[in-house]
Amino acid sequence: AHLARIDAVDEKVHAFLHVDREGALAQARAVDESRARGEELGPLAGVPLALKDIFTTEGVPTTVGSKILEGWVPPYDATVTKRLKAAGVVILGKTNMDEFAMGSSTENSAFGPTGNPWDLTRIPGGSGGGSAAALASFQAPLAIGTDTGGSIRQPASVTGTVGVKPTYGGVSRYGMVAFSSSLDQGGPCARTVLDAALLHEAIAGHDPLDSTSIEASVPPVVEAARTGSVAGLRVGVVRELRGEGFQQGVLNRFDESVELLRGLGATIVELSCPSFDKALAAYYLIAPSECSSNLARFDAMRYGLRVGDDGTRSAEEVTSLTRESGFGPEVKRRIMLGTYALSSGYYDAYYGSAQKVRTLVARDFGRAFEQVDVVVSPTTPTTAFPIGERVDDPMAMYLADLCTIPVNLAGNAAMSLPCGLADEDGLPVGLQIIAPAMADDRLYRVGAAVE
Ligand code: GLN
Image (cartoon, rainbow, N blue to C red; front, side, top):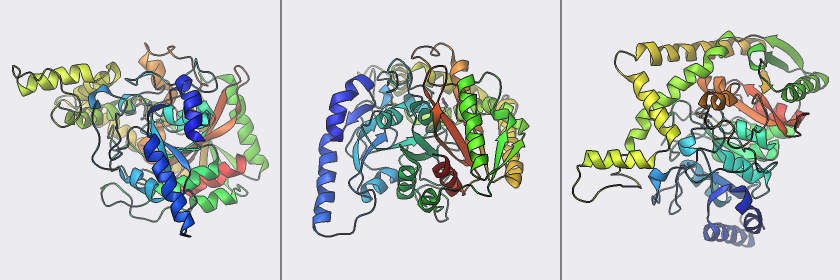
């Protein structure tokens, strides 16, 4: 049924870069056979899923939305892919994304943009717009995204779906193509809080193949999603995450959500986190710096595209030509910014200062969580904007992640879930819930209560 749905609508939506029809049917049959044998199956066995094209899949192309990986077929599965398969999940295909997960609209994909199912002339968010659009257009009930600065939560917000960035280290990064390793985190996307929790549980947990993977048991997210209560909980509203320039309809739905929480028995506490004002600037030094280092591996020798290798050019020239035509403009901008920020003489002024801001942001969160159990905010300042509106204005594009980026800098867990439609345009608004590291279950408890 889901493959038929893809055939019917994806020409318009363009959520998928690759549909793995045979693989999906084979997995579905295998699940059916185990059921027939009377084997015990997990809650997600046989459930279809859309996988962001940043996770390696053995024998199935993985592009990361870039031309530079053209023709590359990974010889191994990412840990997330492996765990999905082990849970009996049916992977329908790989979803569209901003190239190397750099963007907030999916317009930076080398393979063309994805439309927002609510209004195809608008962006579905990014970088994981394909995964969110697949959910919102009912092409898949589950999806996987990655969130470096908001790429799970902002697409969830603008498509009226649920997206969770787990605690940093909660889900393995092995086989997830690196953008900014100290910020990148894979996580679940779904249409309900409970579905997200079931998926979270399936992919999370320690992995010896990822040195930053946390060695602790997975927080009880499914139990929390089934409980769904906020009675007696202290909920913080941060002044800096509800600022100027926010769309009025977004603020209206947010304020109503806060009142709903109060009505359900939560105590609302007003807070200030002064360093959050500098978080975006720090992120746009740290993420490009790590990107410039991570993307050095695309040298035309190891993976995918190779341009100009005709026997007359040196390896260095082939590398340059390949990177020149293989990377898109936003990726090049980030590599240049990062290379500059890390260069000797500028390192302390830029990268060093950004790391100090990062510490201050984490301390602000630390102080906040002494007073409250969770923090709430709008997920993103506006609803889905028209395709093309911000492509020539990177600063406007970067603002989409104003409320999500502090969470990545501190390594906390956060969820975006729908909280209604904006008055001006009737488009979905997202509520962000933030919890301390390793308290991911609180997101699900609160999310299920207000869903
Ligand atoms: N939009 C942000 C960026 O462009 C975040 C992307 C992400 O979370 N992968 O870097």
